[in-house]
Amino acid sequence: MEEYVLICEDTMEGMLTGVYEAYQIKKEKGISSHDLIHLAIARPTMNRLFTQYYDVKSDQIKAEKVIDTIRRVLGEQTYYRVCMAMVSCFEDKADTVYHTIVKGLMTKDKMIMDRLQEDCVNATFRYARASENELCHMKQFLRFSELDNGLLYAKIKTKQHILPFLMPHFADRLPADNFLIYDEETGTFGLHPQYKQWYLVEGVDFEESRINYSAVEEEYQKLFQCFCNTIAIEARINPRLQRSMLPLRFRSTMTEFKKV
Image (cartoon, rainbow, N blue to C red; front, side, top):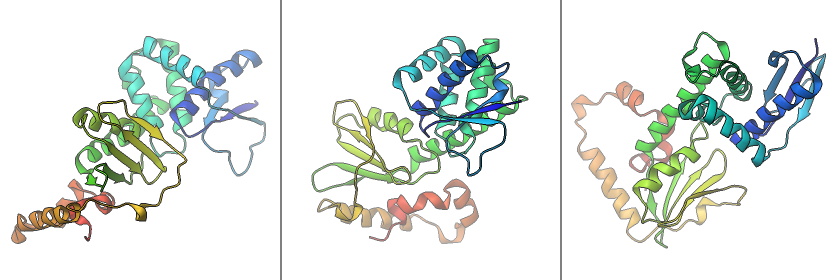
């Protein structure tokens, strides 16, 4: 039996547009089951037999229609979990999210994320949890540095694309500051003007070597590193425990582990 694969962009808007188009294709072609339709964020290196491939262009209006439906039928908590799964780094996330939404809308079950016996729901739950864990880490481990123009700058390097969920956290805590968070993995900037709404910027050429720190920034970094080293009790240093609490991959962007 012929199957259909929709290739969508690796963004929340792109995947939600893919969900919308999947329902449209099912209706227009009279496809018997959603099991014959799949979403992907990249075209496979080799096409499968008896499979039709469609490229889906992101559409904000279509994505918002899907969002409204998820919120109305499945609730805010399910919508949040679905969004967290969509910003994860897993290649099959679009398909698992799509089939989770399908099962939820078919049953109108606001507790759909508790049905972990369903493969797609189980995968969506795991992907969302991975993003939530990394978001929790970054709220604690992100370090800002002051630039010579007074802007607060921070760089993150994460597996999951959590910047859209990280920005509200710091916008709420630093409303009076101009700050910028740069996601090195995606090349995305989160910008927050003081007392204004934050926003994301993509596709901008950026050379970190051109950044100029304020006159006192390096001195404060040295003081902070000295403080962290001083409070350590050598006899109680436990590298294994430290790595479990603070994974090595986060340390490259943390002040206390940088060489100033």
